[in-house]
Image (cartoon, rainbow, N blue to C red; front, side):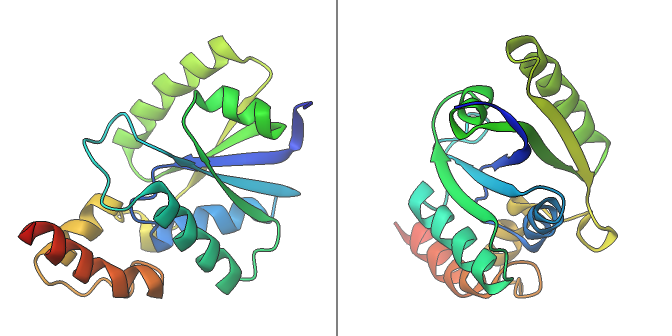
Length: 171
């Protein structure tokens, strides 16, 4: 498949997807003809995910449909990001940036990806101010201690999260 600048990949673990993720995905969908949300099957930087890749995919698909994002598709991948982008015909990788710590990590990843695939461009969308603090890890921690996360994640995630965390802590 040929690489296109009109197709972009938004990769991540999305464990779980947050409204901050959806903000980045939605904004990318306004710029590109097609946006593929790439759900990392088993993230390298995380020990174990709370949700399976299929569950994470379903949450994103439902949220994209709820937001009327018709040019979004969701795919699970287990290979190098640039290989996945090529398989999907994407010429651009979109990442969200919240803070300096995000920049440092993404800068390193960008350099490695450019070395492997100079034909695939990386673009960054700064988090909206209302989501600049938001992370999946923070959401899971809030839910663990009984905090209300309904304003931070899609409704399906909010209803699932408390149950999943309490069930996992019992097991």
